[in-house]
Image 1 (cartoon, rainbow, N blue to C red):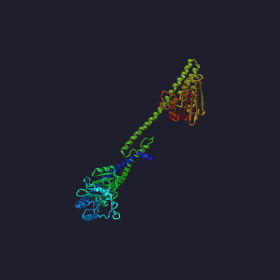
Image 2: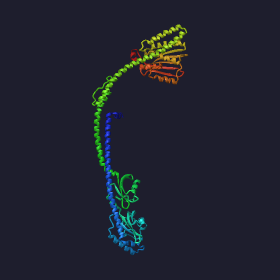
Image 3: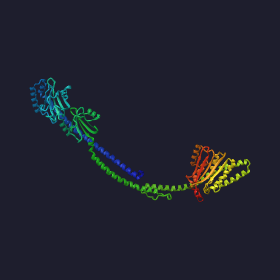
Image 4: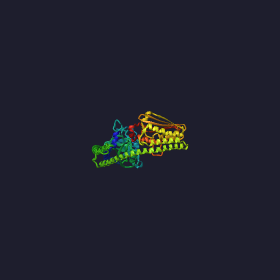
Length: 607
């Protein structure tokens, strides 16, 4: 995961990836365009040839149908005796035999049949029936007059005598005599026969051999999976190039049905069932549609060689691109890595790059600017180090200068009180104590003092307040003897004690008690000053605790926060002040500092 993250941020890796992706996308787009263009060309060619082939198939079918129609009309027109015989409703056997001989002779002499004609029927309304085989292959007593296809053949409404009869079963054949025709569907061309009075007396019905017609359509087919179908006006399959699905309906979409209904011819793509096809259609002379449909997958399969060639070329180009990209990436990666390694290995004791030539002028400019930056950084570090030393000294001076005025103010207030009451000896003692305290404060200013000296100072300092409050304030010391030989910052405890008197007792204690303790805790000393004063509410405690962390130590608020900042300034963030208090139950302030021995005083003071 880390390696992947590094590669994402690597300049050379990004150049490699971008170069490869750009070229791959370019090749894929270009190849896709070529494939699409070639597919469209193939589709256009297939459409063109399919239209031509379908046009020839339609022309051939129209020629056959027109030829059959012409011969049927000629046969009836030139043989009036047929209409005369069929007009007789009471034909005798002799009349039937005579008509049979006439028709047999006529049918033998006529060239009425071509390859797609299966049989010819002459059926009269008087019950007479004859076909090419002279009824020898027909079922006797078959109810021809009741059949729908016969009723359509003798229908002359609208003065239409010629009809194209849709699919109907040839169930009138005897299956033992004509098994090839019995039960097989056919469609027919028919002509109504009328007598001299224009009355319909029968019909000539020419049955089409669907299998032969299918062979004709198959010879016109273009693709292996493509088919040519003859559809009637209800889009029922009358004939098909492979002789399949005769009598069924193609699962055409509504759009395809609408186009077939509204147009005479055309080409388009649409679904037949669940597969997309290229569809061409022509309208025949009888109003039926000759429809060619070829699966698009077969058409597009002709572009597979082009696609395979493109894939091979793409793989070769990708390999070449990888080699070129790796070469370019390495030529960039080596000098960049050299520069980054030199930057990473810069020693803070010697802020300077190890090399000056990184092959590319841009990298050399970066290196020069970085060297200049290192020189400036080194100078800033030196200046900052000196500034920090001066700043720490200034902060210590500032802290102590803030502490001393408060001490003097409280002491002078006590002295003023004694003078007012005329207590000369006590006033003299206060002056002597004050001089000792000032001498302690001003002497050996920057160094730590022994814990015993600081405690001695605090005892003398608090003695002044004990005198002032006349027994209302008492102090107890709990000091570990082992802690007395260590050192501590001067005047560390005075502001804390002063805080107890001013805030804990509000400068007016009553049975007030201050407890000062010093104990060793491992490698540190803990000083604790506690009182039984007013304490702090939860809100006040939160405010005081928040103030401890403020960086501004030159504020007018010079109490506990200044002590906390002073300890941290000298010894670091592991030491400082901790406060705990409850409203009405006094306050407890703890200060921790490291163990400071005499030999480490100067080093610790300035660390």
